[in-house]
Length: 60
Image 1 (cartoon, rainbow, N blue to C red):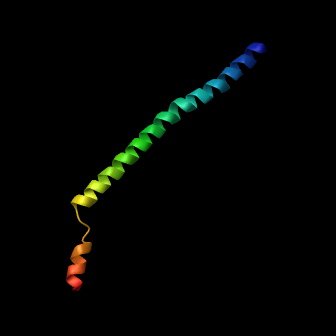
Image 2 (cartoon, rainbow, N blue to C red):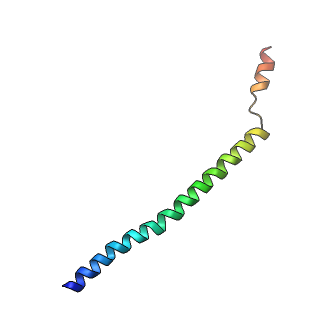
Image 3 (cartoon, rainbow, N blue to C red):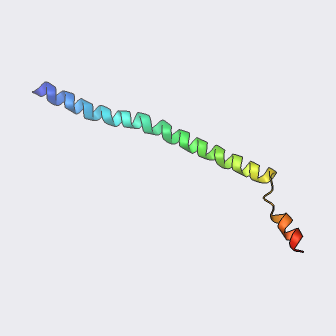
């Protein structure tokens, strides 16, 4: 009976470790990708104008 209790307890403790091992790298990858996408969007926005100046020129 004690062996079963020890095994069940170990399973619960290891479940928490596995959760940390999976979620921490995923969070790091998400934050890194988010920063890269924001940077790429800023560069693309600076290189390719959205046409606001053209609309102002046509109205004048």
